[in-house]
Each structure stands twice: as C-alpha cells, then as structure tokens.
Image (cartoon, rainbow, N blue to C red; front, side):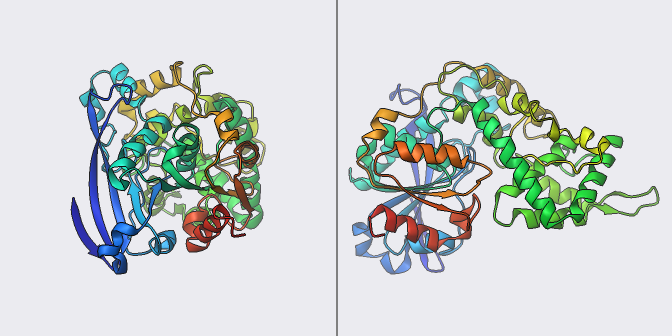
Amino acid sequence: MTTYRQPGLVLTDHRFPVPLDHARPDGERIEVFGREVVASGNAGADREQLPWLVYLEGGPGFGARRFIGPQAWLGRAVQEFRVLLLDQRGTGRSTPANRQTLPLRGTPAEQADYLAHFRADSIVRDCELIRRRLTGGAPWTVLGQSFGGFCATHYLSTAPQGLERVLITGGLPSLHATADEVYRAAYPRIRRKNEAHYTRYPQDAERARAVVAHLLDHEVTLPGGGRLTPEAFQSLGTLLGSGEGTHQLHLLLEGAFVPTPGGPALADAFLEQVQAHLSYAGHPLYAVLHEAIYAQGKGPTDWAAERVRAEYPEFDAGAALAEGRPPLFTGETVHPWHFTTDPALRPLRETAELLAARTDWTPLYDPERLADNRVPVAAAVYHDDMYVDTGHSLTTARTIRGLRTWVTDEFEHDGVRAGGPRVLDRLLALARDEI
C-alpha cells in the first residue's frame, strides 16, 4: 500500500488479487486497484471507525474518476465515510484490457473468452472479496453511477448481505429488456435531445449540415489516425446526455471550418477536439462490452444498436442532407464501423464480433430476490435521461422492495458530478428514511 496526501485528503492505494473466473477460485488471478480516500481530519485513529463507501463508476470501461482534493460528491462523502474509488476489472489500473494488452491472451477467440469475465457479475464478486478484506466482514455502502448502478442492482440480486445501503445515480437498469429493446427505447430519446438542441441553437442546423456535406465529399483523418465519417460525426451526440453537453456541442460546431487556399476545410482545432470526444483509446471496453451489459441468455446481441438504427431512417445523415433537414446526432450506441474508424479499436474488431455473436450470457438480475429486498436503496432517476431509459428505471424501481426514487429534471445523466454534495445528501437522506 502507498499512502500520500492531497489538499484536505489522505489517499491510500490498494491492489487486490482476485480470480479471473470466480467459478475457479484457484485458477488464474488478475489485479484490481482501489484508492482509499479519507478526510485529513479523519486520518488518525478514528479512521478505523468510519464506515466504508465503495464507488462504482459508469461505463462499462471507465476507471474511477481521479479527483484532486475533495471535489464534487467526494467532499461530502468523506465527511462520514472511508471512500474506496474502485477501478473495475479491466479499467484504469486494474489489469487493463485494451489493444495493447489483449494480444497477450492469444487469439481473438481467447480474448473474447477472457472478456466474458468482465461484466457486472464478476465486478460484484470482486467487490465482495475486497469488502471482506477491508471491512472484516462488515457490510458497506455502494454508490453506483450509471453502469455502476447496474452493478449495484446485480449486487442486490446476488450478495445483499454485503450491503449496508445502496445509492444509485442514473443507473437503474431494466431487469428484462434485451439489447434490441434497450435501443428501441433509446433512439426516440436521442431524437428528442436533438430537437431540444436545435431549438436552443438553431444556427447549429446549418453548421451540422455543412460538416456532413464536407465529410460526404472528402476523406477526413483525425490527428490520431481515426477516420471522421458522417456516422462518426453524428456520434458526437453522446454529448447531449450530459448537463453541459448541448453547450459543448454548440461551441464545437461554431469553430468547425476555417478558410484555406483550397476552400473551407475542417479546422485542425475542431478535429483535435472531435478526436478527444470520439476516441475509445482511454476506455475501449465501453465499445467492446457495451451491448454485453444487456445480454442475459436471450440470444446474441448481434450489434443491436446498428440493427435497430435501421428502424429509424431519420438518423440517416445523407438522407437528411438531401431532404433539407438537419442531421440527427446519435449517442450511447456502439456500431461495427467503430472498429474500422478508431485506431484504438481496429485490432479488437474480431474479438468484438465474437462477443456480439456470443449466446451463453447468464442472467444478471433476480426479480424475485429484489422483490424481497431488505437493503435500504435510494436512486436518482433523471427525467428523459438519454443514457438510461426513465421508463425502464421506474419499472425496476417498483420491483425492488423498499427502493425510494428521486425523479428530477434538474440534472442530466451526469447529475452526481454536476450536483455533487446535494445529490449525495438527498440519496443518503432517502436511504435513511429521513425525508
């Protein structure tokens, strides 16, 4: 363990060996990284008396957020908890899985078999091993953001004895929906986010049309070697699911073009910013495993987002251009072409294909056990959340015994970051039955 300080905090880095396959506890082991955080004033002998809160980041594929000092919700949490910021397996410093490391596993088929152990079920079993090591067996509080909430719901289904309480922000999953059903619910929400964006910034309609027209006539390469196709440009719509995203997209579009001797061209600064938003280099598992988080033994996911998109022809950028409509942005969807346009994903194309065709995924949730839940649970559900369907979340909320919801349109999907202490305060109060 390594311990060091930041303003207002004392941090301790932990590394935990865990089985790759929890069904074979004596088999191959991987390493999971977690960063313990306590307030400077609690770093003495009293530290051992503090209850634990483990934070599960959204994703899949993202390591826990790297805070500097008591920022956002963390400042509120360390007032009463020892916080563990956990890099879920394959992310951050937890035996990272990416184009550089996965070839060590062997063939694409061997890589796919390896990554089949990187869903919520394995993450929760990692948590249980780590909990017993850190707490001496005492239950802890889980804070799950987005996909972290999916993991927390699985936790309630399989190991409620490890939980003191559960707090979920923008991450109550459907217990039954297939990947196809998830995306049939998603595309109309994404369309509404586009309509709201163009209502706020009507000048962006012509700007987006100009970019699509340029990309249809020119082959454009991003600074990191990725290809910017019309479909890749449309996927900037992932910004529309965050609180400041519509404004960020507007500011990005207003600087799209610069004059050159050969006529208007996409600006280097624009392309640099686009790359930062579109590259999967920092979180490749988001693309590789994204649809697998919805798979529960009901057949292959088979690129559900791509197939379902064909049911919504209004998202065809070329047709929009021909018909004089502004192109619709997409978001929260992964497509086969991502594995040809993005250099970070190209080497993983065959592995991703094998995962999309996989049929032996096990169920992730136990509705009967959730209906008899005894763990205090509070969930923030964001009105018209672009990433997680509000209707699905509320149906699940009615299934989990005792769960209390806070439904709000004050925040978008990243409310736990934007709202910080206030969001955490509200959820803790709900879970403790104080309001």
